Length: 305
Image (cartoon, rainbow, N blue to C red):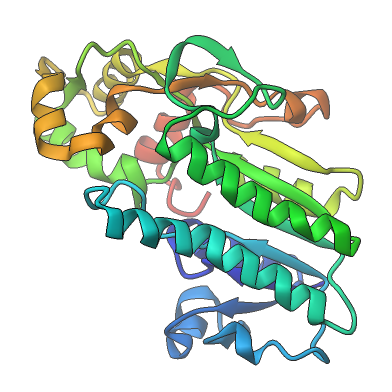
C-alpha cells in the first residue's frame, strides 16, 4: 500500500511511519523540510514539500492526515486561531481538492480530530454518538471533520480520529510532566476533578492501523483508553510510578492568568469512551493508566515497545 502522510515528522507521525514501513507499506510524507524526512521517518520514505507536487497521475492507496499546529503552545489570539484553523481545516480542504483532481483516487482518508470535539464537560461521558460542543476547540474539531467528510462524495471511506492525550515518553504531555514530577514538584491542576481521557502510544498506533485496514470502518472513532481518570488520579498515579510525592496544587486562577483561554484545556476535560473500538472488540494492551505509565517510564525496553 502506498500512503500519503501529513504530519509525518511529528511525534506520532514518525512512529506511524516506522510502523507502516515495518509492515511493508510505501510512504510519502508531506513536509516543509523534505530533506529531513528520510532521517526522521525512515530511509525509504519519500517526501514532497507541497501538495502542488501531487499531480493527477500520482496514485496513493490511502491518505493519513495528522497535520496541525500545536493547540496549547501559544495564546489564542485572533492570529493564532487562524493559524490553528488553517493548519487543520485549510490543509484538509486542500487534500480533498487534490483527491478530487487525482486520476485514480485513494480508497480511504484517515483524518485527525480530537476529543475536544465534545467541548469542556466533566459531568457526563461521551461516546461517538454525542454532539459537538460549542467552545473554540470543539468548533475547530467540528470544522476539521466536516472538511474531511467532503471526501465521501468522491467515493472515499473517511475516518475521523478523535484523539485523546497520547502518552509517549519521548514527547507530548508526558514528557513535559515527567521532569517536574521527578524533582518532586509535580502538582494537581486546579480542583483535580477534570477528566483526562488518554491513550498509550502503542494502542493508538494499533487502533489507527486497524482502522486503516478495516474496509468497514467509517465515521468518527474515539482513540482513548477505556478507563479515563481525573487529573487528581493521573497526578497520583504518575507520582507513584516515579516513586515520588505530588504534594502541590497549581491554583486555577494562576493558570488562567498565565494561559488565558488555553487554560480550559488543563482545567476542564471530558470523559470519553472508545465505544466503537470496543464494539469492534479491539484489544487494548494498556487499558488502565498504571500499566501504561509503568510500561512507558519503568520498563527496561519501554523505548522499543
